[in-house]
Length: 52
Image (tube, rainbow, N blue to C red; front, side):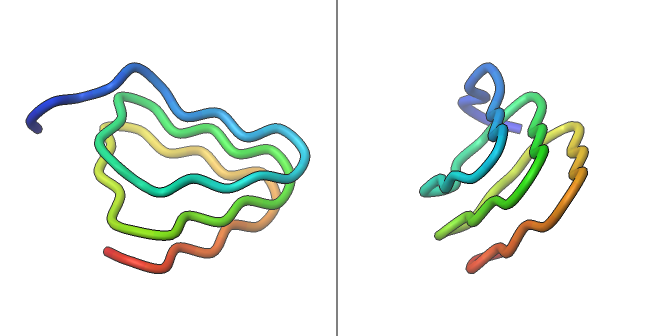
């Protein structure tokens, strides 16, 4: 994976434009508007991804 940013964390409600991440943690409601690439993803709640 190239250009890996640290982590993406959403607690409660939030959104992201996507990107490259080491770990994605979502607790609550999340929305990702774009492609996302990560090593680990944990979702406790709901998440919609509009991308790949």
